[in-house]
Amino acid sequence: MFAAIIVALAVLCAIFFIRYYAAKTRLTEKSIDMAIARRLLASPVIMEVSELRELNSVMRNLLIDFVEAEDVKPRSAGSQL
Image 1 (spheres, rainbow, N blue to C red):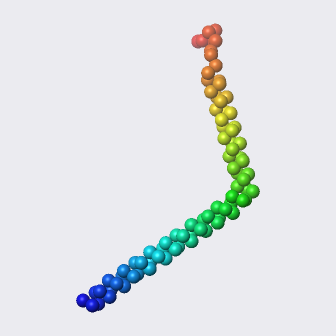
Image 2: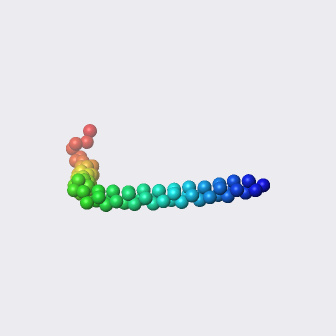
Image 3: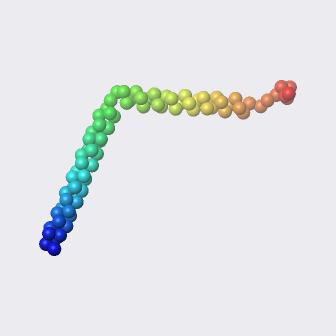
């Protein structure tokens, strides 16, 4: 009976020990990810990519407007088949 209590306490301590180090590992990984994100935000390549994305969206919107304008054109009565 005494051995079962000792084993149960050892298992309980092991569970808390594992959970503590798992939480500590997650916190460390999160801080590393945040440090990498900070470094990438300052990178000139990332700034250029964000500018290109913005220009790409502007061009896409212009092309959509051109296509919509062509579709809306009224057809003349003489061109009907």
